[in-house]
Image 1 (tube, one colour):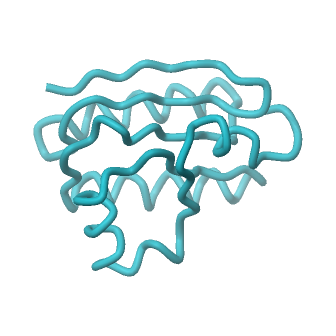
Image 2: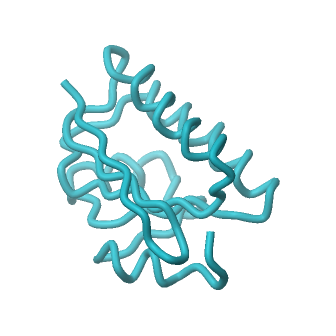
Length: 115
């Protein structure tokens, strides 16, 4: 099961995620991300504080979305990533592709202009 909540911040949209991002939940995850992008918001913070696992399917979605966001001058950043999940990012050498923040507030403030 995956729970997704979108929050609005002055400089970004925040997607709070609770659960596992895997083959069963990837459609729901991608739909939520696409909904934010379709709304014209190109600065996105993913709050991973309650994400226990992300599969290759989840990483595929992140890679697709981050490329699209950056093509439009925005960015996707991650906040409060749990150590077990961060290790997966690190093992795949994705720590060079994404910016990570200790707090959602710091992640949202990392964007220059309002989303």
